[in-house]
Structures are given as C-alpha cells and as structure tokens.
Amino acid sequence: MSRQRARLRAEREEQQALVRAKRAREADRRYARAARRRVVVDAVPRRRIRVARPRGILETRRRRRFGFTVAVAFLLQVLTWSLTDFWWARVSVALLTVLFVPVILSLLSDRRS
Image (cartoon, rainbow, N blue to C red):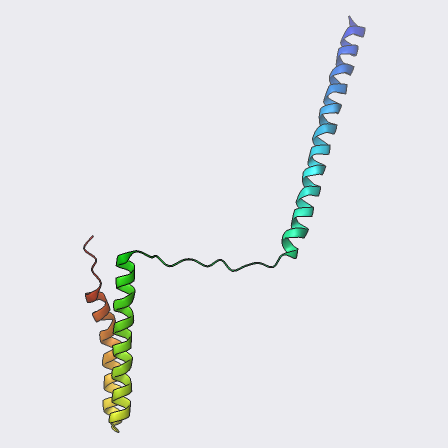
C-alpha cells in the first residue's frame, strides 16, 4: 500500500510540475508580448483625441446665440473705446458688459427640460 501511495504521490507531483511549467511558459509569453507591445506603443507618437462638438440643431442654435452675444459685447467695447475719451465711461461700459453678458446668455438659453 505504501508503494502505491508513493507512486500516486509521485504522479500527482509530476502532473503539478507539468502544470506549473505550462503556467510559467504562458506567463513568460504574456510578459514578452506585453514588452513587445510596449516598445511599439511607445515608438508611435500619441495623437490628441479630438472631442467632436455636438451637432444637434439646438446646440447649433445655442452656439450661434452665444457667438452673436459675444460679438455684440465686443462691438460695444470697440465703439465705446473709439468714440469716448472718458475713462470712467470706458470702465463703466466694460464693467457693465462683464456683468450683463452672462445674464443675457442665461436668458437666451432655453432650458425648460
């Protein structure tokens, strides 16, 4: 009985050794593949990923309103700076523009959802 148990134990250990060797080969293969992939990935320059703008009708309208409001505010600044020589008028128009442009943009945005 003892010889049979010793033989079975030897067979089990041999099977386990084969399984361990197979796992080690697979791990080595995975590691080598990852190393090759790292070399290739590091050699290629990274591209910046561009995030596309939303192209829906509502988003286009919102962007158009925003652009129009900013253009009108800029035109108001240019006219004020070119037509007046008074610094208090220039500063007050700039301050009022900074204060009211966000208010106008929030009033123009339709967020009833």
